[in-house]
Image (tube, one colour):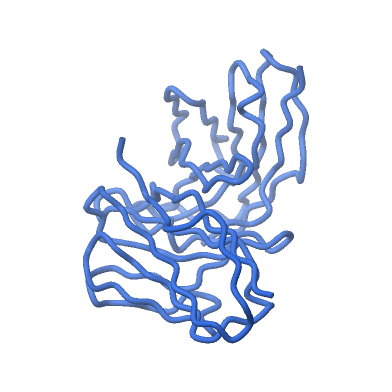
Length: 112
Length: 113
């Protein structure tokens, strides 16, 4: 699996967009970018994934740079309930995310 | 709502006790996983299973064993609990068709005294 680098913490004002960056400069051509989050005292929750095109679902948007060496998870209108640790992981498609290494991630704090 | 459930949210055991942590998923997933989570160390994979009666070691299997007698249930066993096994334990499952989207349980906070 490619290694990922994320900032340890970020703050965001409630109602504003939260943009969480992830660097994955060693990503290979068949590897996908997955995002999970973990709200305090709960298990991680899948958010979104992508290969090279931008992706959007009901939870978030994922922007992947053209060279695929970095990506940004966007929460368009952050709420207090979005305060969590966000993990960026890189895996081959349909390889087990359960075998992924979840590092320290980014602790996002949404403030009123 | 489909889910992964774990038998206890909080558990306190004494050193040397045998501890069973149970995980059940209702999504007919083939793959199941056990992790522990400690501050500064992230999630570390202990054991996983791709099928009934099948198990494979993860990154930190020492001191643990597992059992998967039925597809929906994956048990983690601490044969003789030690204080360094005090941790948050998380179970997860995924299907063969969507392996990238693991579903996690709520976790069990185990304290060994």
